[in-house]
Every structure is written in structure tokens, then in C-alpha cells.
Length: 347
Image (cartoon, rainbow, N blue to C red; front, side, top):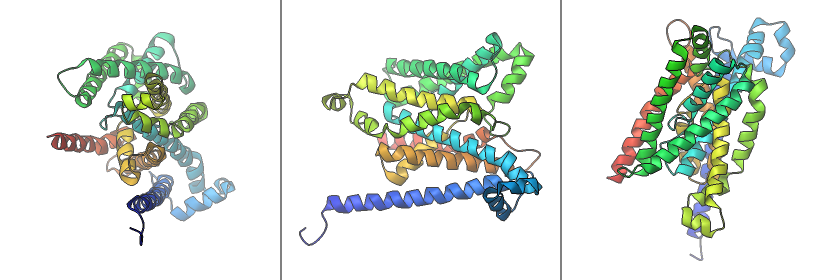
């Protein structure tokens, strides 16, 4: 190989090009869906007007279209940026720690755990406000995630991958029943929860002011977890030999994932499959190195959430379809295809 590159150097060059191409594609898609989010709705606005409004905010005083862009759609788009990044990063972390590519905050019941805690706080403590919801959502998400993981490890008749998904599904069914029990007897609580329970971006932009510190903290922490997740992915024995205290490291990274899920759920209500799809698309773009997968999954989560929101506005009929329904439409067949692929590979 004296006259050419070594295989390792050539592979590194190919991987670098792949990451650059993936980054370019993700950024182009992000800009496209962000512009669509600002332009599309009950009142369609020309992209040129959108750009002029962003460059000259004072235009909102002279143009109704510009006011719609800046006062209504821009905050909604920024909320999608925050929530999509949180859910994308949480999906990568949860899949890396559990070594299970079929999980995210929705599959593990983390988001419904947060929802149950918020409903209980509304019903029994009269809590209101997104920043107050956050602390209950954080506690509920943490307890649920821990219980689901422990329950999956008690199963001996199935693989850990399958038992984790089954445990998450069982927990989700139980939590949904608890929510129904708590809300069905109190009409005021039911009305309050009905508005919050369906994951949506419309009418939620005000939560950014209260929740952005928690979301930004989780996102920043997640960006520094890539190396730790890579080591944990080598197995407990190897990680221990490399000097990592595995239980403490797992607790640390899962705490960040729960923080991200709690911030996202407190802001918009439960939105499933964003973390699952975002993590897998990120790995297709940049490979399994979590130092790269986490930031790319954030981008992919934002693109998916914005695209789902735009498609929900374009759906025929009166009104728009909420974003959590649209992500389920995309995510459910993706999950089924992924599970089937893993089963075929295992066979």
C-alpha cells in the first residue's frame, strides 16, 4: 500500500465526507421546513414576505402577514426547535444506554410517566404553569423509566430487547388507565388535561419562556455525553476495565435523558416517536459514534417535528391535525419495520 492511502485513512476520509454530506442535507431540510412552518397555515404567506419579516421585525407594524409570521408562527417554530432537539437527543441516549434501538421516551413510558405526575399535581395540588409542571414531570418520568428498566431485567423468557419494549408497553397502558381514572371524575381537571395531554405546538409558545433553561441545560449536557456513551456501548466489563464506574455513568446519562423528556413533555404534552426516528436517521447519516449521533439526532428531531407540524396544517378538513398524531402516523410504521428487520436479522 506504499503508493496509496491505507484502508484506515481512506475509511476516515469516507466517513468525514459522509458526515459533511449528512450535515448539509440536514441543514437544507431544516431551513426548508422552518420556512414552510413560517409560511404555511390557515393563511398562506409568501416565502419572500417571511424572509423580509425576519430581516426587518418592524415590518410587523405595517403588514398583517409579517405580524402573523413574527407573533404567531415564529414562536411556534422556535418551540419545535427546542422540543425536537430535546427528544432527538433523548432518543440517542436511551438507545445507547439500554443497547436497544427500539426505544425512546414514548416507548419506555417516560413521557406518560411525566403526564401522570402532572395530572396528579393538577388534581390534588392545584398546580398550574409550565415551569411548575416541569418538576412533577421530571419526577414522574424518572420513576417510570427506572421501574420499566428494572421490570425488563426481571424477565428471563425473552431477550432484553423484547422485554424492555414489552415492559414499556405495559407501563404505558397502566399509566394511561391511571390518567383516565384521575380525570374522568373531575370535569375541570379533565378539561385542563385534555388541552395539555395531546402533544401539540399550537398555543404552547408561551412555555418557551418558562422551560428554555431546563431544555438548554439538558441539550448542552447531552452534547458532552458522546464519549461516555461510546464506552458504555463496549459492554460493562470493557467499560469497567477502562476506568468507568458503569452504574454511576448509566445513572448520569439517563438523568440527562429524563431531563430532556420532562422539558419537552412539559412544553407540549407527550409527542412520541421523534426520538426513535431521529436517532436512527442520525445513525444512517453519521454512523454509530455518539459524539456525532447526538447533535445530528437533534437536527433530525427538529426536522421531523417541524415537517409533521406543517403536514398537520395541510391536512384536508376543518382545522389542523395535532403534531403528536402526525408523528405517530410516521413513527408507528417505522417502528414496525424496524422491529421486523431486527427479527429477521436475529433469525
